[in-house]
Image (cartoon, rainbow, N blue to C red):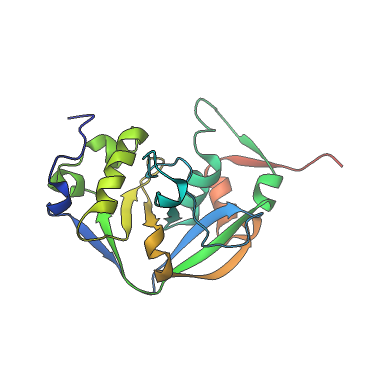
Length: 206
């Protein structure tokens, strides 16, 4: 049923969990003006903390993707292609002003699993797993964060292409390390992604 909030007692309910093993690597695209590839935010996002409390007391999130393509879709392209046929122009500066970081898991992460039938097993509404109602997803994110198991975050399918994403709670950032950063334009495989998505990079006028 759409719009269902976490029920009373959810903090003690059984969760469908997935362990992200140490040694696995994910990607992250972030604005180049920020120096820390592991910097996290508390601004509104898919699983951000919606509670009206002191900013310092709200939890933050670090989003990662398992492919360069999903990172590009989530951080750069998003819904720009909606209703657009043929090539989609994008300014070259979009690729030079952002960085791509490779992030390695150094200590296993325990994640709430919203993939496949995970939401059904936990009674989580499909709107949360699909990302179709962000306000609802944020309420459930609070319930996941406050659960007695103290999970490290959420593993979920991208609403854009179904690839796997991680939303890592700030308390688990210490279980990650950045193993390499570069300008997005230099990210391995990006050229293939742009070609596959029919994105045309527009150079600035001389």
